[in-house]
Image (cartoon, rainbow, N blue to C red; front, top):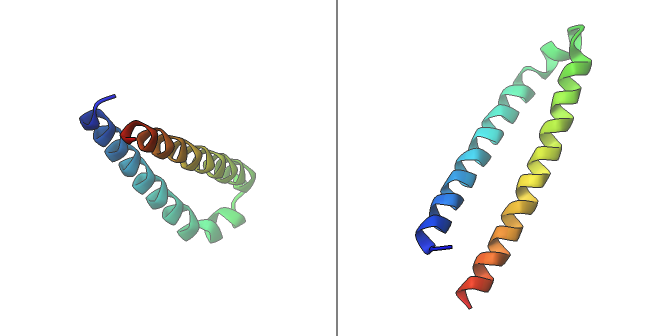
Length: 73
């Protein structure tokens, strides 16, 4: 994988992480509203799915960092 493609991939991952953080902030801001609504269990399912996805993305970034480090050696 060329350095340019690695940089592009990292930029896309960074953008995705920013979107995840923004979505989390919106969800936290509306938590009070969600707790009072009948769909709160669905919201909790989405929050849990979001956390699993966030952990998966963090793990993947770690793997990419290790791969990049290995390629640079």
